[in-house]
Length: 212
Image (cartoon, rainbow, N blue to C red; front, side, top):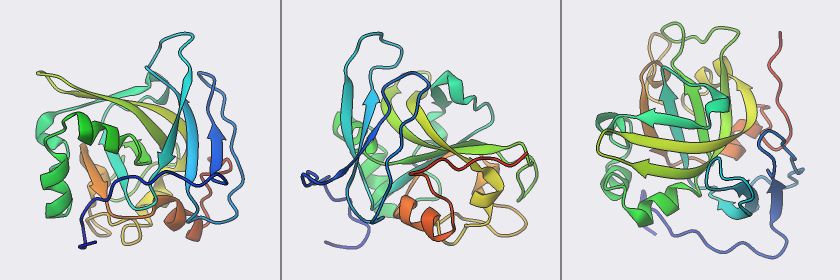
């Protein structure tokens, strides 16, 4: 397949890993023996609807989505995003062309991409010790006239400075003076997120705690 082209999500084999996220706050994490193995996760949807059965989503190992916002609150379970900062910046041209229309098919595809969601860095290329990024599953995307709302389930906390330290590995633009974690935007990266985090000693398939 040509470089940068987005492939359809293939059905996972019977032995695919399953992560269960069945409660509004509870997290049940499975162990990963092989980072490149297909991973299925169970998430409740739609957001805030009591009694709705969980759905199974196969997480992509080829792409992830980065969501940076000035007003992130993990328990809000949704992030607003301006159209002018959605799926435009810091992306390869092929991804930008295919995803920016944000139609029904694109939304379903994006729901299979794991996400990193966080506030903007407190400083130019440095997060404060209190800042936390979340490895999350996107459950729905609402594309409205006044803006976009990205709904998600937060799964694992990651000290945000650790993400600043992985610019090259996670295909994040910038340098030691300024990087894209300092700007509100939503982008898709051609990176196996779970694998790259694991190489850096950050496990999102087992809890990663923020040190006090």
